Image 1 (cartoon, rainbow, N blue to C red):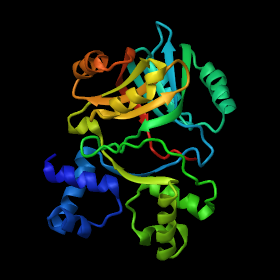
Image 2 (image 1 turned 135 degrees about the vertical axis):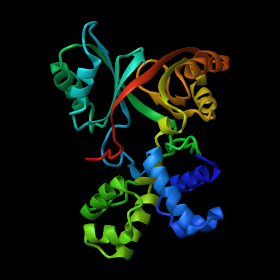
Image 3 (image 1 turned 90 degrees about the horizontal axis):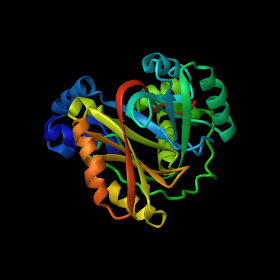
Image 4 (image 1 turned 90 degrees about the vertical axis):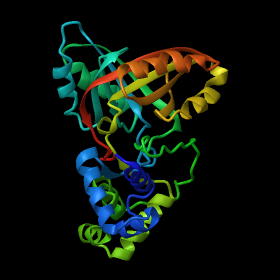
Length: 310
């Protein structure tokens, strides 16, 4: 990936619907070159175009991480594959560290989460312990392009309760989740609305904060194969200041405050396990107020999807 690729990825993260002609003009290149680069980013670097919805608006809890510990003789491969079958789960990975399997799911209530943990997961043999962590506040969210441009977003309360979303809006969001770069013509045909109407609805959904359109690349294909989670125990009075400091690191893609003990949840990529271990145990330890860090490294990815609403 060269400098033009990185600049192109940055532009697409900011607005994946930007036309090839406009991208060419802004990047000082030709439309033909940009089109070829786009094809290469998709085929070689796993680039996808999607829409990330505001889960709270659609009645979901914020990110729910489920940490699973297995019995000593249990197969993480077999159990992880069973968990992949649940529609509530959008991410499943085998891990090395303080858990054997990590899942991310979307649930509309604590009751739904409890039923899933106690009943659905409870029926899977080989699980010895389950921990859940619910995001209370996000300090940094990823655009999945840490390698082009990271977007830091401090949580703000947006007044989107007065915005109405009808069936056409919902179907439009589902289509944009599949391909946020889809043409107005294609969306118009699928949703059965005029192109101007589709355009107005997209603008409304974006401006209201109901969706964020972005481009997502595969870090493992551009030199950052090690994906990790770091739980950071901190002095409670310094939690927000520490979170903001950690969010400044380019390798960090996510910083959130989660339920449970006073811990920050940090997501980060690295070039190797040794690289992320150095970051978690050495670099972060220099920050005043951090009491302890626990590292989890993803070893096998079984499921990942970004179409969160269902």
